[in-house]
Image (cartoon, rainbow, N blue to C red; front, side):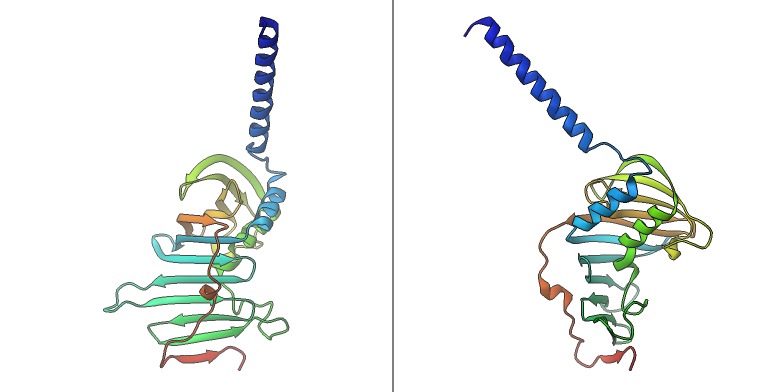
Amino acid sequence: MDRKRIAAILVGLALAAGVGLTILTFTTRVPNADSLPGKAAAGLEQLKTVQGRLHLGKDDQTVEYELWVQRPRHLRAEAELEGLDRKAVYIMTFNEEEAWTYDPVLNLATVTDRSEGAPAAGSRFGTSLLETMPDDVLAALRAGELQIVGEEAVAGRNALRVQVLLPPGQSPLEEAGEQLTVWLDRSTYYPLAIEGDTGFRMRFDFIKFDEKIDPRTFVFFPPPGATVRRIGE
């Protein structure tokens, strides 16, 4: 092979590598404040499942939850209660038809009808911050003034750190207040951590996305002897 042909091949490979690098840079570029809400909405729209472990609470008083989510209407969360002389696990299990919460201290299971047309449908009954959180954060991104601070690692994943200032009295995430810092997963835009001016804190220390979850995860049967209370009856 002559030198001119070798040189042409090398130039072609260099150009191809340059184009590939340009595409990679473009696809991983940090979005600006104007485009962030749209990108977050598109990322969440594609997200199917979430599994992880997080700490949720206020100031230094937090509870550790194991979480399973199949968007948009299925959720299970479990928290082992501390300070008891026996193992006791608080459970929330939501699906399209029902929402169950189980308090092991009271041995009380509360169920809310979530089917279309049910009395509690569209209300805060039969839902949880853990379920509405990503959509609440998206609403905050759309309503607030945004400052993108940079990228940080959260739960072993690359996250976009964003400061959000919301109009007085108009926070979609009431628990966190009107000045928020959120860390959004760079691939899915799911919130990996939130800090609010009320002292509210949420942070995952382990998370994985779009892995199959057994459908039985989102079905709850009250333990024998538990009192069952139905909201609306």
